[in-house]
Image (cartoon, rainbow, N blue to C red):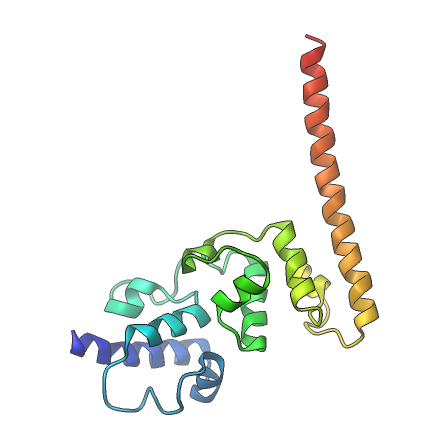
Amino acid sequence: MIENKLAIKKRVIQYLDFKGVSKYRFYKETGLSNGMLDKNGAIGSDKCEIIYSQYPDINLVWFLTGYGEMIEKGIPNNNPIILRIIDITRKLGVSYQVFCKAINRDYDSKVNWYHTFTDDEIKNIFIAYPQFNPIWLLTGEGEMIIVNSVSNDIKLLEVSNESLKRENKLLEELLSVYRGKENI
């Protein structure tokens, strides 16, 4: 088991090389001590959890055992919003667990990365972190960070308005279904 824990460090380095992440950036993003990857000794499960929370696209089976593909298929690469949320957590220097708590998202495991974010969770991102550009998060256009908080408030209202329009449309469709049943 110790041998496998030593190999985990090698896999972390391999993953960082593949993703183009420097060790400096890795230590900064994870909060792990500088040089940890180069020191002798095994890596503990607590550090594995920290690494996985910062890099959720890493295939957990590969990370722990060396078997399978390095990158998890289907998450979060198929959802650009989730990729941008990963960028936000890295920019903030917070773990996924801390991020979930701030936006009132249930956190029970990293499996949450598989699921999309609800409209309320998206709104909560902008409430908890108003410096982030809603247009950038939803479309990838523009800058990640907004300097002017007034324009951020306007954009947040626009996002909320669009969300309410979608919700209203769904309610109208449901209402028409129920009205149709009344006429039967």
